[in-house]
Every structure is written in C-alpha cells, then in structure tokens.
Image (cartoon, rainbow, N blue to C red):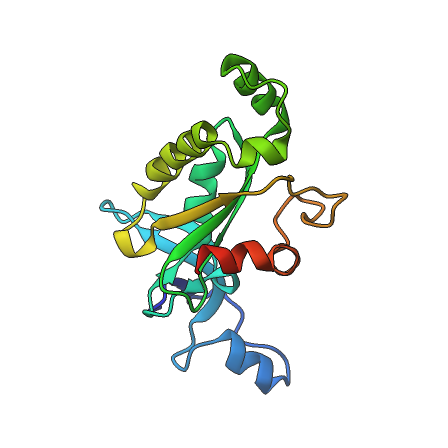
Length: 190
C-alpha cells in the first residue's frame, strides 16, 4: 500500500466477513487485497520485513509516515535505555521520550562519579544526555532524515506494568504515556 501496509491476496486468504459489509470495506481494498495492519519494507533481495503496525504509524505535519518501531527497537538496544516512545503525530519533526534502565544506570553513575545522584538529577545530566544522544544518532542511521529523532527527553521514571504504561506483553500503552507525559511531549515541540 502507499503507506507501507502489507496487503495480502490469494487462495489462503478469506474472501470476507459473513454478512458484514462495514468490516469488509475496512479490511479489504477495492481489488480484494486483505489489509494486514502490519507495516513492511522490501529489501534489495525482495524479502519482506515487518517494521511496525499501521495503527502506530506517525504522520508528521509534513505528511511523512514514520513507523516508530524501527527507531524504538534500535534505541532500546542501548544498554542504558529501558524504554522509549517516539512521538510526532501532526508535528514538524520526530522526537522521543526515553527512560533509563535502573541497573545499568547504577553502574554508569558509579563509573562516572555520580553515584549519589537521583534518577531525576541524572535525567538532566549533560554527560548522560550526551550518551543518549549518541544512541539516538545510532538509531537514526536506520531511517531517512525526515524520519529521524530530532529531540528527546529523558524521563525521571521508567515505563512499568505496575504504573500502567505497559501491557501484559510489555508493549507501550501509547495513549497512557502520551496523556501522562503530555507536558514533556509539548516541551519537545516548543
């Protein structure tokens, strides 16, 4: 599809929902392809990689479609990053909320002679900001400039299941995080 959604057609795909025209219109294209809800990219060898879910797709104010999973997965691979959520729907650029892994932070703080500092203090620390900026720069290598994270903020808390930020399978509840950290998101675009 134009926005990168994986469309499927063939004898293994159902022909439609029984007596449910509304569901059929939503789930199938006019020419009979099933809308999977997955976002995909073909590589140079023709292999399909799933890069995210369409319902999570961010559309910037410039009309650029961004699948957040690509950036989030790469950023989360950094040892100091616990969670991150890419934001930027109807905004001029992409930004991110980043949470820090508590155990990794203890080691980092000791190595950087900051072991007495709280997470809230370290979230504003220029040295930690620089380390996370390097991780962001590395994550940005996987996407175009228009899709890259331009700003980020380190949150003084982690996203947790108990805090209501994560689902049982540890996926981010985007609406909950966006609501709870609306002020921080707004500041990223100020």
